[in-house]
Length: 387
Image (spheres, one colour):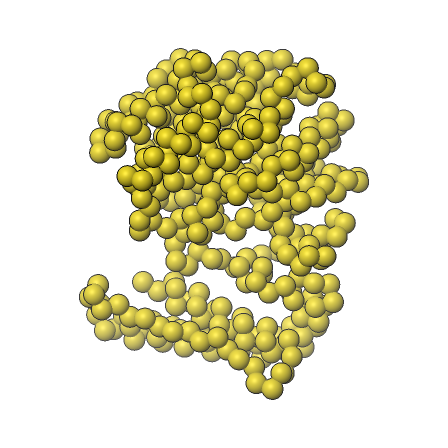
Protein backbone atom coordinates (compact mmCIF):
# COMPACT_ATOMS: atom_id res chain seq x y z
CA UNK A 1 0.00 0.00 0.00
CA UNK A 2 1.46 3.33 -1.06
CA UNK A 3 0.80 6.00 1.52
CA UNK A 4 0.38 9.62 0.46
CA UNK A 5 1.46 12.69 2.36
CA UNK A 6 -0.59 15.36 0.60
CA UNK A 7 -3.01 17.60 2.45
CA UNK A 8 -6.22 19.34 1.46
CA UNK A 9 -7.23 21.81 4.13
CA UNK A 10 -7.59 19.98 7.44
CA UNK A 11 -7.46 16.56 5.75
CA UNK A 12 -4.48 14.34 5.05
CA UNK A 13 -4.72 12.05 2.04
CA UNK A 14 -3.80 8.47 2.88
CA UNK A 15 -4.30 6.51 -0.33
CA UNK A 16 -6.46 6.33 -3.41
CA UNK A 17 -9.56 4.16 -3.10
CA UNK A 18 -10.58 4.18 -6.76
CA UNK A 19 -11.70 6.21 -9.74
CA UNK A 20 -14.63 6.39 -12.11
CA UNK A 21 -15.50 8.11 -15.34
CA UNK A 22 -14.94 11.60 -13.93
CA UNK A 23 -13.83 11.48 -10.30
CA UNK A 24 -11.31 9.75 -8.12
CA UNK A 25 -11.74 9.06 -4.42
CA UNK A 26 -9.11 8.97 -1.67
CA UNK A 27 -9.11 7.74 1.89
CA UNK A 28 -8.22 10.71 4.09
CA UNK A 29 -7.92 11.59 7.75
CA UNK A 30 -9.73 14.49 9.42
CA UNK A 31 -7.23 16.01 11.85
CA UNK A 32 -9.86 18.08 13.66
CA UNK A 33 -12.36 15.32 14.47
CA UNK A 34 -9.85 12.45 14.25
CA UNK A 35 -11.85 10.25 11.93
CA UNK A 36 -11.42 8.69 8.47
CA UNK A 37 -13.23 10.38 5.58
CA UNK A 38 -13.46 9.95 1.82
CA UNK A 39 -12.27 12.82 -0.36
CA UNK A 40 -13.36 13.06 -3.99
CA UNK A 41 -12.08 15.27 -6.79
CA UNK A 42 -12.37 15.47 -10.55
CA UNK A 43 -9.63 13.41 -12.14
CA UNK A 44 -6.74 15.64 -13.29
CA UNK A 45 -6.79 14.15 -16.80
CA UNK A 46 -10.40 15.26 -17.18
CA UNK A 47 -9.67 18.92 -16.57
CA UNK A 48 -11.86 21.31 -14.60
CA UNK A 49 -13.60 23.83 -16.82
CA UNK A 50 -16.19 26.22 -15.47
CA UNK A 51 -19.11 23.95 -16.37
CA UNK A 52 -17.49 20.86 -14.87
CA UNK A 53 -16.53 22.76 -11.72
CA UNK A 54 -20.09 24.01 -11.33
CA UNK A 55 -21.43 20.49 -11.75
CA UNK A 56 -18.97 19.23 -9.15
CA UNK A 57 -19.97 21.92 -6.65
CA UNK A 58 -23.60 21.23 -7.34
CA UNK A 59 -22.99 17.61 -6.43
CA UNK A 60 -21.66 18.71 -3.05
CA UNK A 61 -24.57 21.06 -2.40
CA UNK A 62 -27.15 18.49 -3.51
CA UNK A 63 -25.70 15.62 -1.49
CA UNK A 64 -25.15 17.80 1.60
CA UNK A 65 -28.90 18.41 1.73
CA UNK A 66 -29.47 14.72 2.32
CA UNK A 67 -29.22 13.11 5.74
CA UNK A 68 -30.36 9.51 5.60
CA UNK A 69 -28.89 6.20 6.84
CA UNK A 70 -28.84 4.83 3.29
CA UNK A 71 -27.16 7.82 1.62
CA UNK A 72 -23.51 8.74 2.09
CA UNK A 73 -23.29 12.01 4.05
CA UNK A 74 -21.30 14.94 2.65
CA UNK A 75 -19.24 16.75 5.29
CA UNK A 76 -17.32 19.48 3.52
CA UNK A 77 -16.38 21.20 0.24
CA UNK A 78 -12.73 22.25 -0.02
CA UNK A 79 -12.21 24.81 -2.75
CA UNK A 80 -8.94 25.96 -4.25
CA UNK A 81 -6.82 25.01 -7.24
CA UNK A 82 -8.81 21.79 -7.24
CA UNK A 83 -12.21 21.31 -5.61
CA UNK A 84 -12.71 18.38 -3.21
CA UNK A 85 -15.86 16.90 -1.72
CA UNK A 86 -15.24 15.39 1.71
CA UNK A 87 -17.76 12.77 2.70
CA UNK A 88 -18.48 9.89 5.02
CA UNK A 89 -16.09 6.99 4.59
CA UNK A 90 -18.00 3.72 4.23
CA UNK A 91 -16.04 0.61 5.10
CA UNK A 92 -17.33 -2.35 3.15
CA UNK A 93 -17.69 -3.54 -0.44
CA UNK A 94 -19.64 -2.31 -3.40
CA UNK A 95 -22.69 -4.30 -4.40
CA UNK A 96 -21.02 -4.91 -7.76
CA UNK A 97 -18.08 -6.62 -6.02
CA UNK A 98 -20.42 -8.71 -3.91
CA UNK A 99 -22.41 -9.87 -6.94
CA UNK A 100 -19.21 -10.57 -8.87
CA UNK A 101 -17.95 -12.86 -6.09
CA UNK A 102 -21.19 -14.47 -4.88
CA UNK A 103 -23.54 -14.50 -7.86
CA UNK A 104 -27.29 -14.30 -7.17
CA UNK A 105 -28.22 -13.33 -3.63
CA UNK A 106 -30.76 -15.08 -1.43
CA UNK A 107 -34.20 -13.54 -1.87
CA UNK A 108 -34.21 -12.14 1.67
CA UNK A 109 -30.85 -10.39 1.22
CA UNK A 110 -31.82 -8.92 -2.17
CA UNK A 111 -35.14 -7.65 -0.82
CA UNK A 112 -33.50 -6.09 2.22
CA UNK A 113 -30.79 -4.30 0.22
CA UNK A 114 -33.29 -3.09 -2.39
CA UNK A 115 -35.55 -1.79 0.38
CA UNK A 116 -32.71 0.23 1.85
CA UNK A 117 -31.81 1.69 -1.55
CA UNK A 118 -35.48 2.53 -2.20
CA UNK A 119 -35.69 4.33 1.15
CA UNK A 120 -32.55 6.33 0.32
CA UNK A 121 -33.99 7.26 -3.08
CA UNK A 122 -37.28 8.25 -1.47
CA UNK A 123 -35.40 10.66 0.82
CA UNK A 124 -33.54 12.14 -2.16
CA UNK A 125 -36.69 12.49 -4.24
CA UNK A 126 -38.47 14.17 -1.34
CA UNK A 127 -35.66 16.76 -1.41
CA UNK A 128 -36.21 17.28 -5.12
CA UNK A 129 -33.15 15.33 -6.27
CA UNK A 130 -32.75 12.52 -8.77
CA UNK A 131 -29.62 10.40 -8.84
CA UNK A 132 -29.51 9.47 -12.56
CA UNK A 133 -26.64 7.01 -12.16
CA UNK A 134 -27.86 4.36 -9.73
CA UNK A 135 -25.99 1.10 -10.28
CA UNK A 136 -24.39 -1.71 -8.31
CA UNK A 137 -21.03 0.11 -8.36
CA UNK A 138 -22.65 3.08 -6.59
CA UNK A 139 -24.09 1.10 -3.68
CA UNK A 140 -21.79 0.22 -0.79
CA UNK A 141 -22.67 -2.53 1.67
CA UNK A 142 -21.15 -2.43 5.14
CA UNK A 143 -20.13 -5.58 7.05
CA UNK A 144 -23.39 -5.22 9.00
CA UNK A 145 -25.44 -5.33 5.78
CA UNK A 146 -26.32 -1.63 5.58
CA UNK A 147 -26.64 -0.27 2.05
CA UNK A 148 -25.48 3.27 1.27
CA UNK A 149 -25.94 5.09 -2.03
CA UNK A 150 -22.77 6.73 -3.33
CA UNK A 151 -21.92 9.33 -5.92
CA UNK A 152 -24.55 11.89 -6.59
CA UNK A 153 -22.19 13.25 -9.25
CA UNK A 154 -24.93 13.10 -11.86
CA UNK A 155 -27.70 14.27 -9.54
CA UNK A 156 -29.56 17.46 -10.37
CA UNK A 157 -32.72 19.22 -9.13
CA UNK A 158 -35.96 17.66 -10.36
CA UNK A 159 -37.32 21.08 -11.16
CA UNK A 160 -35.95 22.65 -14.35
CA UNK A 161 -35.74 26.24 -15.43
CA UNK A 162 -34.27 27.43 -12.12
CA UNK A 163 -30.70 27.75 -13.33
CA UNK A 164 -28.24 27.04 -16.10
CA UNK A 165 -28.40 23.54 -17.52
CA UNK A 166 -25.05 21.79 -17.37
CA UNK A 167 -26.09 18.86 -19.54
CA UNK A 168 -26.29 19.38 -23.28
CA UNK A 169 -29.52 18.30 -24.96
CA UNK A 170 -29.30 14.67 -26.05
CA UNK A 171 -26.14 13.92 -24.06
CA UNK A 172 -26.32 10.44 -22.57
CA UNK A 173 -25.16 10.27 -18.95
CA UNK A 174 -25.04 7.31 -16.63
CA UNK A 175 -24.09 3.69 -17.19
CA UNK A 176 -25.49 1.94 -20.25
CA UNK A 177 -26.82 -1.22 -18.65
CA UNK A 178 -28.49 0.60 -15.75
CA UNK A 179 -29.92 3.73 -17.32
CA UNK A 180 -33.59 4.15 -18.10
CA UNK A 181 -34.95 4.06 -21.68
CA UNK A 182 -35.60 7.80 -21.57
CA UNK A 183 -31.99 8.43 -20.57
CA UNK A 184 -30.71 6.07 -23.27
CA UNK A 185 -32.72 8.07 -25.81
CA UNK A 186 -31.19 11.32 -24.57
CA UNK A 187 -34.39 12.49 -22.89
CA UNK A 188 -35.11 13.95 -19.49
CA UNK A 189 -34.55 11.85 -16.38
CA UNK A 190 -36.81 12.16 -13.37
CA UNK A 191 -37.56 10.15 -10.23
CA UNK A 192 -39.10 7.35 -12.31
CA UNK A 193 -35.74 6.97 -14.09
CA UNK A 194 -34.19 6.12 -10.73
CA UNK A 195 -36.93 3.53 -10.22
CA UNK A 196 -36.00 1.85 -13.50
CA UNK A 197 -32.36 1.71 -12.37
CA UNK A 198 -33.53 0.27 -9.05
CA UNK A 199 -35.34 -2.43 -11.02
CA UNK A 200 -32.10 -3.25 -12.85
CA UNK A 201 -30.33 -3.41 -9.49
CA UNK A 202 -32.91 -5.78 -8.00
CA UNK A 203 -32.89 -7.96 -11.13
CA UNK A 204 -29.08 -8.23 -10.94
CA UNK A 205 -29.20 -9.23 -7.27
CA UNK A 206 -31.79 -11.93 -7.91
CA UNK A 207 -30.57 -13.26 -11.28
CA UNK A 208 -26.84 -12.70 -10.88
CA UNK A 209 -26.64 -10.97 -14.27
CA UNK A 210 -27.79 -7.81 -15.99
CA UNK A 211 -31.21 -7.80 -17.69
CA UNK A 212 -29.98 -5.67 -20.62
CA UNK A 213 -26.21 -6.03 -20.98
CA UNK A 214 -25.22 -6.74 -24.57
CA UNK A 215 -21.96 -7.42 -26.37
CA UNK A 216 -21.53 -3.77 -27.34
CA UNK A 217 -22.75 -0.44 -25.94
CA UNK A 218 -25.08 -0.07 -28.94
CA UNK A 219 -26.62 -3.48 -28.31
CA UNK A 220 -27.00 -2.68 -24.62
CA UNK A 221 -28.77 0.60 -25.38
CA UNK A 222 -31.04 -1.16 -27.85
CA UNK A 223 -31.92 -3.74 -25.20
CA UNK A 224 -32.69 -0.97 -22.69
CA UNK A 225 -34.97 0.92 -25.05
CA UNK A 226 -36.66 -1.88 -27.01
CA UNK A 227 -36.06 -5.39 -25.63
CA UNK A 228 -37.84 -6.83 -22.59
CA UNK A 229 -35.55 -8.72 -20.18
CA UNK A 230 -35.70 -12.47 -19.72
CA UNK A 231 -38.53 -13.20 -17.25
CA UNK A 232 -37.16 -13.33 -13.73
CA UNK A 233 -39.62 -16.12 -12.92
CA UNK A 234 -37.83 -18.33 -15.46
CA UNK A 235 -34.45 -17.62 -13.87
CA UNK A 236 -35.59 -18.01 -10.25
CA UNK A 237 -38.88 -19.98 -10.32
CA UNK A 238 -38.96 -20.17 -6.52
CA UNK A 239 -39.47 -16.42 -6.17
CA UNK A 240 -42.97 -15.23 -5.24
CA UNK A 241 -45.02 -13.58 -8.02
CA UNK A 242 -45.28 -10.40 -5.93
CA UNK A 243 -41.50 -9.96 -6.16
CA UNK A 244 -41.10 -10.81 -9.83
CA UNK A 245 -44.11 -8.61 -10.60
CA UNK A 246 -42.52 -5.69 -8.75
CA UNK A 247 -39.30 -6.07 -10.76
CA UNK A 248 -41.27 -6.19 -14.01
CA UNK A 249 -43.16 -3.03 -13.09
CA UNK A 250 -39.91 -1.22 -12.27
CA UNK A 251 -38.49 -2.23 -15.66
CA UNK A 252 -41.40 -0.92 -17.70
CA UNK A 253 -40.19 0.99 -20.74
CA UNK A 254 -42.82 3.70 -20.28
CA UNK A 255 -42.21 5.79 -17.14
CA UNK A 256 -45.94 6.17 -16.50
CA UNK A 257 -46.29 2.39 -16.09
CA UNK A 258 -43.72 2.17 -13.31
CA UNK A 259 -44.58 2.47 -9.58
CA UNK A 260 -45.64 5.93 -8.50
CA UNK A 261 -42.76 6.58 -6.11
CA UNK A 262 -39.72 5.15 -4.39
CA UNK A 263 -41.64 5.28 -1.12
CA UNK A 264 -44.27 2.99 -2.62
CA UNK A 265 -41.57 0.57 -3.73
CA UNK A 266 -40.03 0.65 -0.26
CA UNK A 267 -43.41 -0.20 1.29
CA UNK A 268 -43.85 -3.15 -1.06
CA UNK A 269 -40.35 -4.41 -0.27
CA UNK A 270 -40.95 -4.06 3.48
CA UNK A 271 -44.04 -6.24 3.12
CA UNK A 272 -42.03 -8.86 1.22
CA UNK A 273 -39.24 -8.68 3.81
CA UNK A 274 -41.64 -10.00 6.44
CA UNK A 275 -41.98 -13.18 4.38
CA UNK A 276 -38.32 -13.47 3.40
CA UNK A 277 -36.15 -12.45 6.35
CA UNK A 278 -32.40 -12.15 5.98
CA UNK A 279 -30.84 -15.20 7.60
CA UNK A 280 -27.36 -16.63 7.29
CA UNK A 281 -26.21 -14.27 4.53
CA UNK A 282 -23.11 -12.13 5.12
CA UNK A 283 -22.02 -9.33 2.78
CA UNK A 284 -18.34 -9.92 3.61
CA UNK A 285 -16.27 -13.07 4.08
CA UNK A 286 -14.91 -13.55 7.62
CA UNK A 287 -11.39 -12.38 6.68
CA UNK A 288 -12.39 -9.42 4.46
CA UNK A 289 -11.56 -6.71 6.95
CA UNK A 290 -8.37 -6.07 4.97
CA UNK A 291 -5.36 -3.94 5.72
CA UNK A 292 -7.24 -0.67 5.86
CA UNK A 293 -9.05 -1.71 9.05
CA UNK A 294 -5.77 -1.50 10.94
CA UNK A 295 -5.18 1.89 9.40
CA UNK A 296 -8.52 3.24 10.54
CA UNK A 297 -8.63 1.70 13.98
CA UNK A 298 -5.29 3.22 15.02
CA UNK A 299 -5.57 7.00 14.75
CA UNK A 300 -2.05 7.40 16.18
CA UNK A 301 -0.76 6.50 12.71
CA UNK A 302 -2.86 9.22 11.14
CA UNK A 303 -2.09 12.24 13.29
CA UNK A 304 0.74 14.56 12.37
CA UNK A 305 2.80 14.38 15.60
CA UNK A 306 1.84 10.77 16.32
CA UNK A 307 2.66 9.85 12.74
CA UNK A 308 6.15 11.29 13.08
CA UNK A 309 6.74 9.40 16.33
CA UNK A 310 5.52 6.16 14.79
CA UNK A 311 7.75 6.55 11.74
CA UNK A 312 10.75 7.38 13.94
CA UNK A 313 10.09 4.35 16.08
CA UNK A 314 9.68 2.21 12.97
CA UNK A 315 13.05 3.35 11.65
CA UNK A 316 14.92 2.64 14.91
CA UNK A 317 13.17 -0.58 15.93
CA UNK A 318 12.00 -2.01 12.64
CA UNK A 319 14.14 -5.13 12.88
CA UNK A 320 12.78 -6.04 16.32
CA UNK A 321 9.18 -5.42 15.24
CA UNK A 322 9.58 -7.51 12.10
CA UNK A 323 11.12 -10.30 14.15
CA UNK A 324 8.21 -10.20 16.58
CA UNK A 325 5.60 -10.28 13.85
CA UNK A 326 7.56 -13.00 12.07
CA UNK A 327 7.44 -15.11 15.23
CA UNK A 328 3.71 -14.61 15.41
CA UNK A 329 3.29 -15.68 11.79
CA UNK A 330 5.44 -18.78 12.38
CA UNK A 331 3.29 -19.65 15.39
CA UNK A 332 0.14 -19.24 13.31
CA UNK A 333 1.62 -21.45 10.57
CA UNK A 334 2.48 -24.15 13.10
CA UNK A 335 -1.05 -24.05 14.44
CA UNK A 336 -2.36 -24.42 10.91
CA UNK A 337 -0.13 -27.43 10.18
CA UNK A 338 -1.13 -29.14 13.43
CA UNK A 339 -4.78 -28.52 12.63
CA UNK A 340 -4.50 -29.95 9.10
CA UNK A 341 -2.74 -33.08 10.38
CA UNK A 342 -5.71 -33.89 12.53
CA UNK A 343 -7.65 -34.71 9.41
CA UNK A 344 -11.04 -33.41 8.49
CA UNK A 345 -12.89 -31.88 11.41
CA UNK A 346 -16.52 -32.77 11.76
CA UNK A 347 -18.92 -29.84 11.28
CA UNK A 348 -20.40 -30.31 14.73
CA UNK A 349 -16.93 -30.06 16.34
CA UNK A 350 -15.34 -26.86 15.00
CA UNK A 351 -11.96 -25.70 16.25
CA UNK A 352 -12.10 -22.33 17.99
CA UNK A 353 -8.95 -20.29 18.55
CA UNK A 354 -9.02 -17.41 21.03
CA UNK A 355 -6.63 -14.55 20.25
CA UNK A 356 -6.22 -12.45 23.37
CA UNK A 357 -5.58 -8.74 23.10
CA UNK A 358 -1.92 -8.06 23.99
CA UNK A 359 -1.38 -5.81 26.98
CA UNK A 360 1.66 -3.64 27.64
CA UNK A 361 2.47 -3.63 31.35
CA UNK A 362 3.59 -0.53 33.18
CA UNK A 363 2.49 2.06 30.66
CA UNK A 364 5.42 1.49 28.31
CA UNK A 365 4.02 4.01 25.79
CA UNK A 366 2.45 4.14 22.37
CA UNK A 367 5.38 2.51 20.57
CA UNK A 368 5.00 -0.86 22.26
CA UNK A 369 1.21 -0.62 22.08
CA UNK A 370 1.47 -0.21 18.33
CA UNK A 371 3.76 -3.22 18.07
CA UNK A 372 1.38 -5.34 20.18
CA UNK A 373 -1.55 -4.30 18.05
CA UNK A 374 0.31 -5.17 14.83
CA UNK A 375 1.25 -8.60 16.21
CA UNK A 376 -2.32 -9.47 17.18
CA UNK A 377 -3.66 -8.25 13.83
CA UNK A 378 -1.11 -10.35 11.92
CA UNK A 379 -2.06 -13.43 13.96
CA UNK A 380 -5.80 -12.98 13.42
CA UNK A 381 -5.41 -12.45 9.70
CA UNK A 382 -3.13 -15.46 9.30
CA UNK A 383 -5.46 -17.75 11.26
CA UNK A 384 -8.45 -16.45 9.28
CA UNK A 385 -6.74 -17.40 6.02
CA UNK A 386 -6.51 -21.11 7.01
CA UNK A 387 -9.13 -23.45 5.61
